[in-house]
Image 1 (cartoon, rainbow, N blue to C red):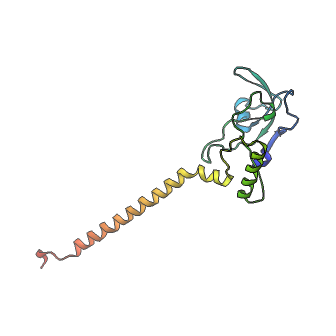
Image 2 (image 1 turned 180 degrees about the vertical axis):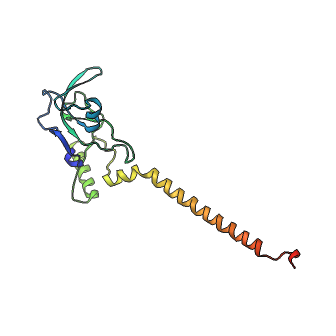
Image 3 (image 1 turned 30 degrees about the vertical axis):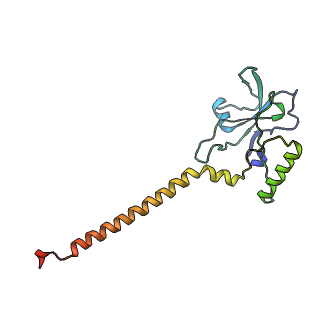
Length: 178
């Protein structure tokens, strides 16, 4: 995941195929997570407990660079990344990240065909390129820029009409001036 997304590993190791059921639970954390929960300390090798119905002990095996998930203007959240093979309960959804040099439309069709060939009942909710996700996250800013430009043009038009009216009024001879 990290190499596909271009997220550098800063310390420790990445999640591996060897992190499977029956082995100690492991996680990779973000820099922000490490700074917040272990200030001035090394996070690698530390144990954290996930509380819930079944509390789980997890060992931190790596630290990765912070990234934004919700949008480019949002800060980086404190993140923990888990080995999906070690999950105790099935997830209601799965996300795949792919990096390829072929056209994204061709890749999307191939991925959909492969998933349908594996299990035709699996719903495919979204297929998006990273560029599309960035565009989507900037939609509000883009709308604000377009509206600001539109209202700026209206303001310039009103200023021109007002200036024309003022010049016409002052340049028009009045009966008292004759």
